[in-house]
Amino acid sequence: MYLRELLSDSVQDEIKTALRQYIRTEKDRVVEHNKLVKAQLAERKSQINALIENLASGKLPPEVVEQIGGKIAALKQEMEVLSVSEPPRDYTTEQIITWLGSIREAPDETAVRLLIERIEVKKDKEKATTEFNIISTLNSVVGKNGCGGRI
Picture 1 (cartoon, helix red, strand yellow):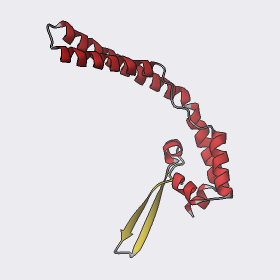
Picture 2 (cartoon, one colour; picture 1 turned 45 degrees about the horizontal axis):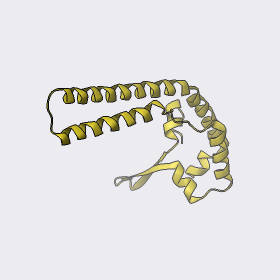
Picture 3 (cartoon, helix red, strand yellow; picture 1 turned 90 degrees about the horizontal axis):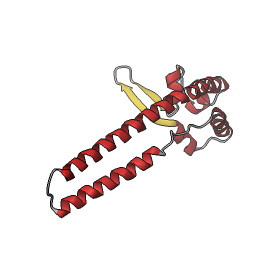
């Protein structure tokens, strides 16, 4: 039932619209990524400066100097990796719609597991009923745009 509704034409249209809205915010996600990288680089630079100050503070045992040198080298390597990191790329709307279409044509257990984050079961003893709430993995994209409650 869940998969049939998720893959219905009307929900597919809502998913397409929501994905296009989500993709339009890619610039914001890139800016946020770059700010995060800049902050992480500044933090590591601050750590390196603190370690250099420790080295300059006076006579230290050789093993401590070696540990500090190793830590500085590790921080510099992290900075190199961070400086070339790129923001994660999302799938395109067309790729996701094609994927959902192929699931509609031939649904399988793996596909269902990819689309369902979790299933919540609530039992109401007074009414002698059980309620199932299926949480979709697509809510992280679609839910932000107002149609996640339906799927």
